[in-house]
Image 1: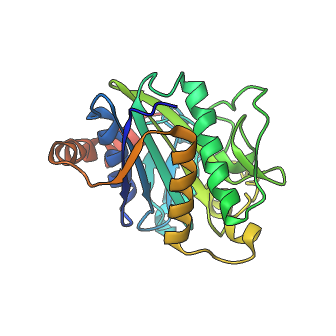
Image 2 (image 1 turned 90 degrees about the horizontal axis):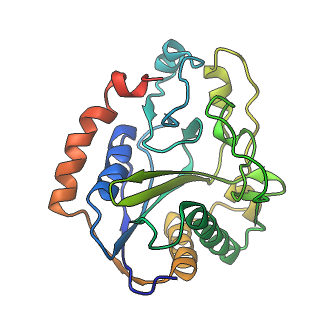
Length: 257
């Protein structure tokens, strides 16, 4: 663990998809040496996010528009996620500060797992062997990828990474309730979308937002080390976010693949 890293924790109100992606990207692009960020947030409406290189042509945009479900493309890889009843996390840190990207991926998932176990959820990590799914392999929660947090063989948290500037961004979705069913109705090929595990289903209750964010924060702090404190966006980060929102709100970016 890097005990010298200074961690800033942001717990944000719900935002639109393009705002969330621009903010995650901005935090990584403007990252200062010796600093890291944990951001926990939600979405202001059900939104589908596509992986950076995932083909978007299999989704029926007219039907999505009729359902009031916007699309956004992430700066990270992975596959489509319907963001609805969930907690989204973003970890931003300098490259190599926590090991290689694969090692970081495993450590972050270990921290997520520890936080969920503290809530009473019976979770584990999927086997780290095997290859990650290809960008055109269908929705993210169709099956677990190596090292992801699962419950009873079903994915509970889907995560993705990207190198940005001198840092990296890893963010992902913790399903609190509901399912990914609407994705099935939005796909042109009718591909079946498996129901993921949900935290409320595992606990037999619906935990409060503060309870879940507190547990996730504690688990990641234990796994990643460093000095942690609450924080807010800095002025230069907000300016970069505003610039990036132009890209993340554009059809040219969303439907680039």
